[in-house]
Image 1 (cartoon, rainbow, N blue to C red):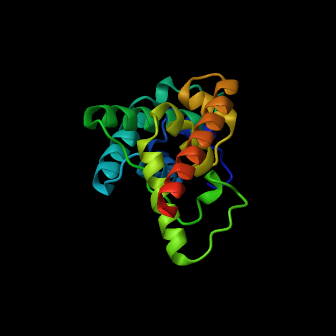
Image 2: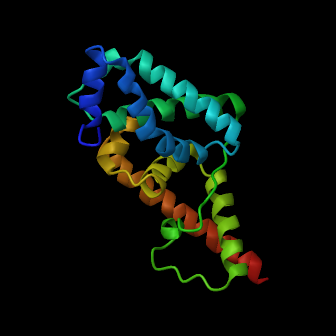
Length: 186
């Protein structure tokens, strides 16, 4: 099963082997959970949205073009569901894992547990307050390790715009963190 691409599995499902859909769920459950948790701070909400995503993917498989990349398509559906949920709730939160500081600076030297804890809280705060326009590409690039092409497909924006949004978002994060640091120093 590991030798088959997502697109080959979808083709087999469309040809009648419906049981193979379990393989799609197996391949994407953790990835999409991780992605959705960046927007939805509540695990129960994330699981509900994830279920909706897998149901929508299954219902819309016949609309998927097997000549395109499946991962971009399923992430687009997850993205849309998260955005729709957030619009209803009017708020979003992102949580960071300890290893996700590359967003700030890949050369960041974080000294001591207390400093690291404050930095993590500050980064989470800045990301959670960030405009969704910048947050979405940043989460996809830094947290989901997607390429500009994949992000372009998911967000339906030009590839150049992806780079611009990531750069502006990252600069905004650094500026806000500098402001927070100045407040901490006082």
